[in-house]
Structures are given as C-alpha cells and as structure tokens.
Image 1: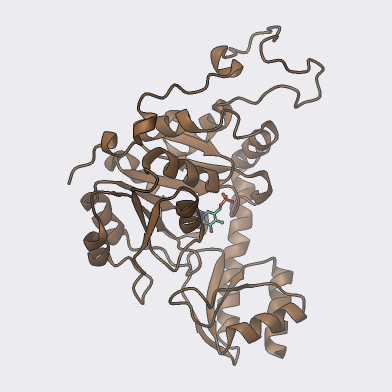
Image 2: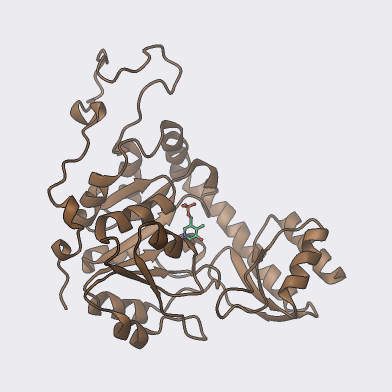
Length: 346
Ligand SMILES: *Cc1c(COP(=O)(O)O)cnc(C)c1O
C-alpha cells in the first residue's frame, strides 16, 4: 500500500487556521525595533519577551549538524509533547489505532489512552526484535502509526535495521522511531534515511546523552509536509526562552557531550563485566543505551534490598518478557562503584 499523507491527517485539521502570534506576524530581521505588539512588560530582565515560536536559531544549528533543512524539524517540550502532537495530528479519536511493541517505553500507551486511540500491542520476539509478520497481520486501514523504540527502553538493544526497513516499505502509515538513546548506540541514526522514506519520523531528546532532562527539549525529524502539520497544531510558545538558550549552548558543545558519552560507554562496559560475576545475576542483556537490563533471581526482593542501601534502580519485572528484571542506569564512575559494592554484599 502506498503512502499518502492526506489519508493520515485528522479531518478537523485539514482546513484549520493556525494561531498567529505577534512573533509570527512580525519576524525580526535583527534590526533595532520598538516592540509594542505583544503586550509584554517592556523592562528588560532577559525573559520579558516572548520566545521565538519557531525556535529558528536552535533549529538552524540542529539542521546543520544533521544535514537537514530547518523545516524538517519540530521542537517540543520534551519528546513526550512531540509524541502527543503526532497522535493529535494523525489519529482520529475513538476510531484509529497505533501499534506498539512491548516491552517498550510506557508513554506510547499512555498517550494513546489520553487521545482515545486504541494501542494495539504486538510483543517483541524473545530476542526483543519486532515480529514483522505479526505486525503486518495486525495492520488494518485504521492503523496510523507504528512506534519503534531503538535502542529500546527497557531492553537496551537496537532493533534490526532490516526489520525496520521492512515495516517502512510495507506500512501505509507513519513509522515513528524513538531514538532517545541513539547517542549511546553503535548504530547510525535513522535521521540519515529521512529522504528515502516519506513515512519515517525520528524523535530524539536532550534528556539523556545531552544531560538536559530538566530543560525539556524533544526533537522530531521528518518529511517537510509531516513537520508542517505538527507545527500548525503545536502550542505557539511550546519551547521557552531559557530552554532555547541552554539547548543552543549544549548542542554546540559537541566535544563536551561526546566526552561524557565516552565515559558512560566505558563505565557500561566495566559494569557489564562486573555484573556477570554477581552470584544472583541470571542474565545481563546486551545494551546499546546508557542502561542495562539485568535478570536476577528475585527482582522484587533485590529492588527492595537496594532501596534499603540507598540505591534506586528500576524494577521492570511486570513488563512482558522482563520477568525478574531490573534496569540499571549507568551512573558516574563513583556511583557505579557504590552499586557494585552493594550488589556484592547483598
Ligand atoms: C527517556 C525517554 C524519552 C525522553 O522523553 P523526554 O520527554 O524528551 O524527556 C523518550 N523516549 C524514550 C524511549 C525514553 O526512554
């Protein structure tokens, strides 16, 4: 079935006029102007003016780094907002369906629920890969989006490129690849494939490798016509001034980010070796992210033991295919030492 964006857009958006803010109607060219158009307080304090609703400076930097055009980028208040916008743009409430592949990131299901969209779950195989045959069987005319998380949270593995390609070419809707952990991966980003697949959407975030979970910046890369619809429905000032400023500084500091990622990757390697020597560790799963999924003898018990010792990890035992699994985020070298010493004493 071929891809036609017009068949995906929600009916009520087709004729919708986007809100036009003061900063949309007069776009500064940098020259000194007297701004009396937005009912702001005129006394300067650094944040008395509305932020750029299209985040042009930040997008210009990201576009250059990724080899894209700025109009292939949407920015949001965390990737959670970006994912929500995808539902609101392309899924008709009480009618449409999305597919997600558990065990995976919990927000796809929550956002489907909030938007009154059915979330059809097609579990990953025992090797945590997409079951492409089962997915293809599950697809119907009302299936609008397939969410793929790669590297996947909480399993840590990257999904097979061949399987993703198979879905991109056979599905008539959008394939959203959540790359929150791509900077820790040995695989290249799917962003490089955007021009090859009109139905490919890639989301990333500054919350993980970039160390900026607190500023809330999510990034969505896609075809121009997809991005333009998301831009039309996003809240006008969804990325605040402080976030735009901090994000620009951090994104330009490629050396600093890379150095931290390098330390985390070295620590990950050390931690995996050490975890394999812990008596109650049953299995350490391969990981391409800044965390590692570990099967233990009794996850509930080990989780509580660790809390008592002052260490908080994530208990994933209730996720399908993750029975008795804990998820450890890679910390600083000191934190990882504390974790290992504690695990050895349990
Ligand atoms: C942490 C995480 C995110 C990040 O979401 P933000 O809203 O950008 O902080 C997105 N997707 C996955 C799979 C994650 O694990």
